[in-house]
Image 1 (cartoon, rainbow, N blue to C red):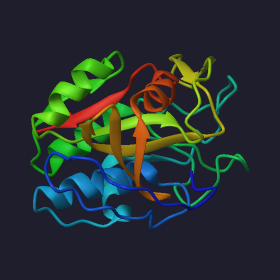
Image 2: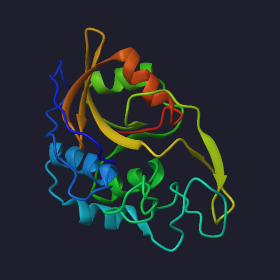
Image 3: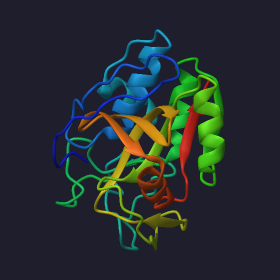
Image 4: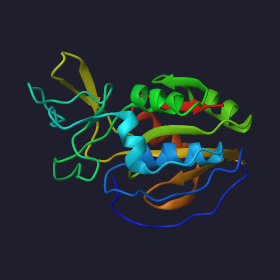
Length: 206
């Protein structure tokens, strides 16, 4: 979800992960995976990556229960070129992103919710970049749940769901490649608050 632009400074990093901007208006997940793929020598565009993640434009609603309520644990909900604020596109959670990463030949070391900041720090400082789910404004928000078309309860804290790549930890700071704002350096406390919003959800690759 892209709302503003900005810049930051980089701290110490793990492998060199290029910073790319979103190619569509609401495809931060695909852009984040594109950065990680490029760091591993795999070139792919956002739309090709979105195709591997999977798109659900039939069950396009989010944030409320109902027969058209999409499940981001299964596919991208809505239109990647839409808008979460306008209700035309939301996002996708870790399982489809991890599956897409594997389809390009990457090894996924961990994926899902409950990946603690300490685990994230250990993996990233060992050279393994992480795709993480955060609040766009770096807030810690309480999520609510809606029931998707398939009966799954979906935690939702929008309309500011966002995905970035974590490339380094150093001196109490976290280095972030943000597909909406570029490279940033955040305090671990600020990052941790935003990361908690989606239940410490991440995809970490070798």
